[in-house]
Length: 147
Image (tube, rainbow, N blue to C red; front, side, top):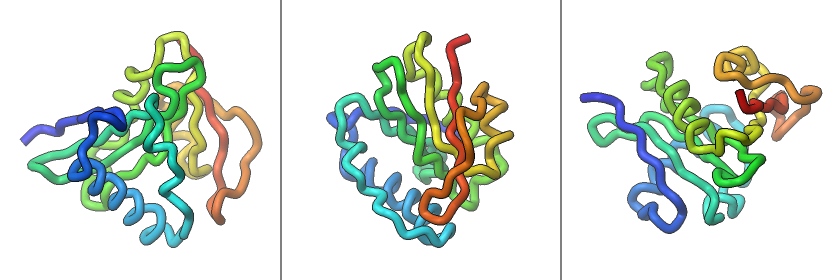
């Protein structure tokens, strides 16, 4: 079966849809990367947040969150791919879809894990500051300006 990408606002998403996205984020960031942090930060509930996920045969393979999707300074974050789906282009498809959800004149922000800086550059993101530590993991701020 083909990869399907879904997008929902907080008003549209059901608990049954949101649960596996949050579970995947915990599995990747908290368990796999051994980084206990407060994932439930309230931003998932804001009206201009978009939950985006890819699934195949009902299995969630990856997810991203787009903040301030309707504004001039949106941000893409919480990029997580299941271990079984890595290397299949799932995260790339999600990033490309996330970019299309943002206004064409918007500068898109993200905070990349530093080792993924070159990967995000493939989508037009460039370094926007110095490396910093977030919960014990080196990160780099990046932006993508309108083309």
